[in-house]
Length: 72
Ligand SMILES: [Zn+2]
Image (tube, rainbow, N blue to C red):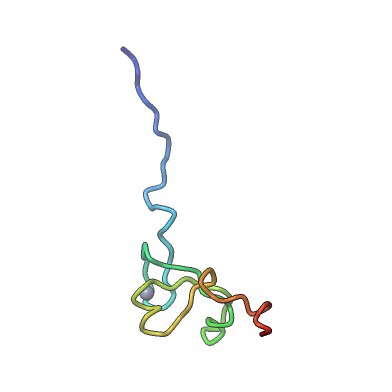
């Protein structure tokens, strides 16, 4: 029974983990924040974790309303 299952080099960090630029650490709740929100940090889009988003009032890109169709 030489059924040695090869799992390969599975990434130890789940895909949901991302670097939170606000508290400076990895978080599994990090979401992409638009460049508009991160311009104060001097760079483009960054990730912010859930507590940091709440603390700084950040809105993830995916949760932002479509400003293009905001012509009511
Ligand atoms: Zn954070």
